[in-house]
Amino acid sequence: MTASHSELLQLKNLGMATVNILQAIGINNYNELREIGSVEAYRRIKARDINVSKVMLYALEGALMDVHWNDLPPDLKQQLVADAEQDTLSEA
Image 1 (spheres, rainbow, N blue to C red):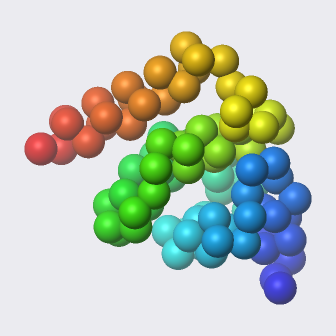
Image 2 (cartoon, helix red, strand yellow):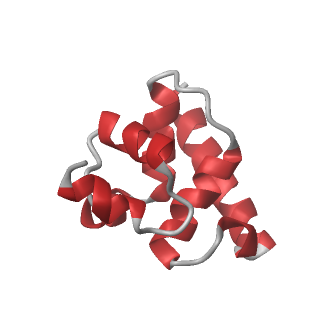
């Protein structure tokens, strides 16, 4: 396991499968995830045809906030989904 694996695995909500997906899209540590943001990371995952649910989006945001994804406020979850869907619509 690399140091970057270890750093990402220490974040809330992120298991080995998620860390592997993040590394596949070029995110190798917390700072890269923070710079890209949860919505853009989610969009990049979806763009690679990796089948993930909205829980992945919540998990990424929760990891950045150090909060379990299930504890994110409902309005924040709605905003994340709206942002993710808005971005994909603008590319169509």
